[in-house]
Amino acid sequence: MTSWKLPLIVAAIAVPIAVAFLFAGPAVGVAAGALAGVAIIAVAAQQRPRGTIGPPPSSDVQRLLVVLAERLEDPRAVEQVARIAHAGGGAGGEVVVLAPARIRFLDRWASDVEGARHEAQQRLVVSVAALTTAGVEAEARVGDEDVVQAVEDQLGSFPASEVVLVSDGDEAAAQAARELEARLRAGFHHVVTGPAAR
Image 1: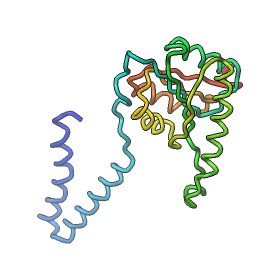
Image 2: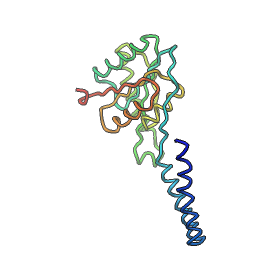
Image 3: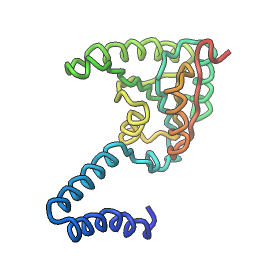
């Protein structure tokens, strides 16, 4: 945020409260203050950090993070990911495959995440097996349900030099791809599987 915006925001909050106290009395002033507080909380709750994601890529070891919004079993998609892995360090590089756990609405309310973790693990088994067949050895991990948050969390412990998002091309994945491309310090690739890739 630029330095001139903060005083304007403070004035936009304080001036209506002060005017309400002066001209309408303490009751209206307190109500205006409470309303301003609720508005601040509502706006803050909807905001997400938009800074860059991940540390600067290290040049010593090539690391590839493959994020599975969809299973990686389409031969052309597997070939694309394998090509990226081999180009980024071949056998000497490290590859981590990350599957975000998709938690359904009712499961979240019931705090039942086992089904989502099991489905993510199945995605991982199929995808890691496909990569192994293509000559890429990888470690498998389950992450946060939000793709962007899962990538951000993972890059804290695995500073990848390249990130690949594998999806079926749906709108949620496309939006995640746009955000990752804009915010990642590492290189980014979006691989689309299935009919959308044809």
